[in-house]
Image (cartoon, one colour):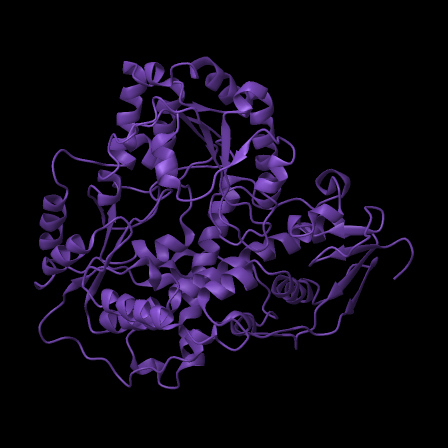
Length: 577
């Protein structure tokens, strides 16, 4: 490496690095060590982020879906010598949740490699790479997400393979590279669970056997009643979509990955042991009693053993219906993994909406019990707390959807500071901040904010009681909390940049309704000014006809509730499927 070269850092920024000598590949180079690089986000030069335009995000999502769909057959062959003897639905159900995750990492990182090469290809650069024979072991899918997709070493290794492929025919004249020693990521011996943990695990497995397991926000009684509504033969034609319809041959979508890139080697490196360890049936025959329907838990994303039971179910000709379990469904502009895993099944129960942009699916609006129990339960009119709720700030773009890029999340974090500064000291003393739960590979959150605004207190413990008892709620992103607050009739002020949190055209129209009513704002300063305006009597402002009409219009399509008991609607819907 010449003295004039900059070192391109693909993993963790080495201590003592300076802007004159080191170039970070992205925000992640500084996460979990921000305190060692004061003002790093302003001092260091970053490459362009490739997915700041919503159309680029949409294209990348479709490319990842095509890559995932085209990878199912070769992945099945890797896992099972008789994979061709099993139905496509078996392998799609079993592999898609993890395969779309891995495909998303490949497509997102490939976009960054191209952006760095195009921006810095003419400069003198030295690139330390991790060698091919580095070794990673991930026990489960959550382990892969937390320590692979959000892990420094695995991402460094993945970037290394992509850079090798990009410069397969020769590196830029002013670039040099070297291999670092290989790294190994092993998992430790599993701790034996306690007796209580074993009992809970047994109860969980029993619950997952129900046709309608207990989902978040449902009672055991509802789970059992809804399960009884699914004992009949499923009616009508199967609405499930084969994942081949997302493949390159069907859509023409292509991420432009070079032929020299060994895709299966990338998949193998990130495949969790829980998926490798499965033993597959020799064959699956169609049920002679005809197709029936069952509802999966969201644990299907995390539990390979449970997901295999669903795969066998689908392989025998039966059907699945997923259920919305949080915000952003029906709103966020791109639904990369959701479309392939959940929308592609026979049916999808929503919280009120019936279309999600260009996503295909059999969408069925039903009132959700989780929301029904919150309806008009706000009781904070005599409270004294302003509650700001934030969201995650990962340094890696580990989910390929229309959310802020890591660099935009740096600005999003600054906006929290701007909001509290604009409030002034009096309202700061009444404020609490609720951070997202800790994730590896993420920017500093509450500690970063509260050391700058020490008058603000940290919100801890269950969120829902604090949501229902606060005097005024502020949310700085589109999320489940917003839906719950509007259903509970909590006086709520929202702010975020809508170009950074892009939603579907249908949802954009709904957000316009909130903006016109003075609920949603574009900047933290505008939101803070609204807080100061209504703080003395939030209920009087929130009770105005225009504000309540906007709240009801939003809830009707995104947080549906009904008069009376919602069980009737669910039972009738389940019996009709």
